[in-house]
Image 1 (spheres, rainbow, N blue to C red):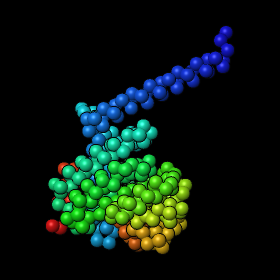
Image 2: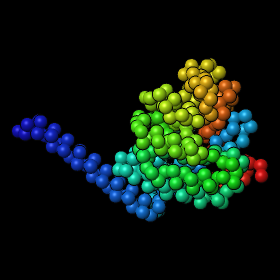
Image 3: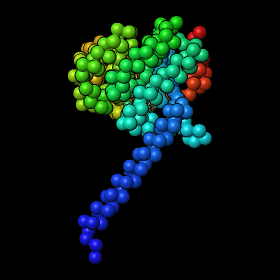
Image 4: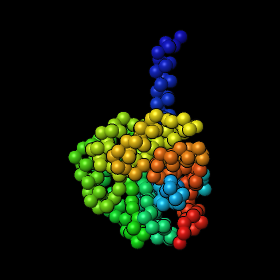
Length: 276
Ligand code: C2E
Ligand code: CA
Ligand code: CA
Ligand code: CA
């Protein structure tokens, strides 16, 4: 009779082997995707809570394998971060966005948000890629906003601080994304001198009635106290909209207004929703 521990060991080995094989095969596909430029930007409108007008957009990455279904970022961004390819993918994405912007008629003071993984803050190419986007929106006095997620603890090393300072000097704005879901929120806000605070969807989803939501209200108050532009994501219904407007959250984003969409759809959206 085979000892149980041997059996368990063999099973664990097989599981590890399979996981490793899956990781390697996804890595291979991602490398190919980079070479073939299969990553593309989707755009989700940002709405001014007072005027109800579209005043910007967040760029959200999608992966379109040839002949396959569109793949959402949760399924490949973590792996790109792990294997060190996220910077290269973002560079491609930003170039595509710059090209897209040239074909759109943007409203004035357009905010264009791009998601940046913490590990990219040591990438020397980031500043040049931002410059490309800044030039693309310059004619409309637009702004480029880098969204840094709070999910991962951002090491506030010398290099990171230096990169952020250089980007700020260059005119790039910084947003802290998924605020309230990570670990070092408050240290971040003072150390990194951010300009925007993005309230995570999970707080917005707690709005069910006009019952005050203590944590959400505290986050909004904190943003105001620190003079930050507050942005609420995941706005899905009128009740949430009313709540956030009453508390003067500056910008709103969510399915109530629009889902993330590809470039042609976003062009049509802008034509329908902004006064030229
Ligand atoms: P995020 O930055 O928090 O982006 C907001 C996510 O919420 C998006 O998911 C968006 O589609 C979704 N969303 C927006 N409004 C609503 C709503 O009303 N209801 C619901 N249920 N969802 C809403 P998406 O596009 O799947 O992106 C997921 C995450 O992937 C992003 O979360 C971001 O962390 C990451 N990501 C996306 N693109 C990039 C990128 O280019 N670079 C990096 N580093 N990360 C990215
Ligand atoms: Ca974001
Ligand atoms: Ca977010
Ligand atoms: Ca989020």
